[in-house]
Length: 375
Image 1 (cartoon, one colour):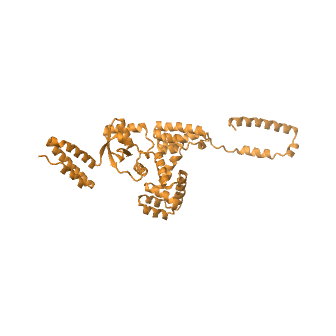
Image 2 (cartoon, one colour):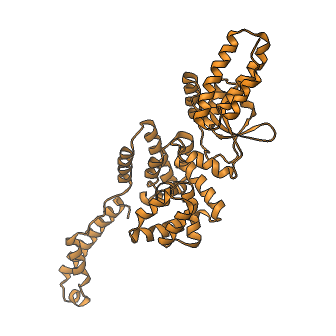
Image 3 (cartoon, one colour):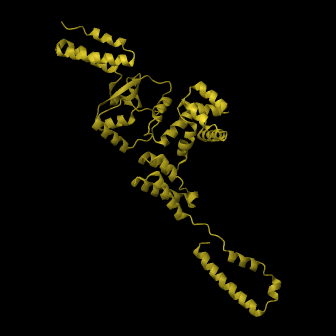
């Protein structure tokens, strides 16, 4: 007589710790195989149920892709067709290595918390479902989404900076300008006092210890709220100021290239120095020059040092070296300026004519040189 399957299902109830789960999963898999060997037709329905329980117990389930909705608070605003195609090729070659993370909704659908590229790649190659781990709805979906993405290298610094500023604004009600000003002011004060290392140490401490640490650094009130919000996300405020905040001040052409063409943040910051002021030209000319150089950087896959060298060469075309004054001309100017009317009165007619002819000739030469130099 076949073994009663509900008794097998009871084994799931005792599995709480991860090591216990793994042990029981192995036992269940072995027992399922033993039941299959018996070839008992009446057991097939129970076996299917048990397999589903086994999947759930291991923490992963297959979810229909059509039931997955995008995260409205998705930090990644940049997702190119090239990156989706690259992920699709990896999925096709190696399969799905890591499950996506979903949040269950009451309507039977799911919000995508982590795995946007994997999900889009799966759709591209025609998958109907994807392996996922279901987690409860976090208290703060925006913050949870941001924390999920902060450690990912493929999240570009522009998206990261915008998401962080949005989260800080929500926590402190400070706008971008106020955040930038407060960061610069406080960090300058901390650096002046030689306490930069003490600030870095606060990242790994708990909230109460972070508060005490900030107070010891003289960071209180609104400034403290700002720094606590960054520390809560596991971010070093000094790093945010140096590496992320400048992303938000980039010209639109560079921001678009980061999002559409995958331009790296360090390259973008270097290219941003090709400004109208730096080149002493119009905004339109500077923009065209940036676009041309950016295309070359991407086409030739230039490194940051190579990009900076190209920028240096470009600036050299626009900027002329400062002209030094001629000592000889300076001396002549001084002598002419001291040539008084009395001196001219006592000069002979021949001298006056020679001086007039000489001055007229030099004025003509000066006029020609002025036209050449566009003075």
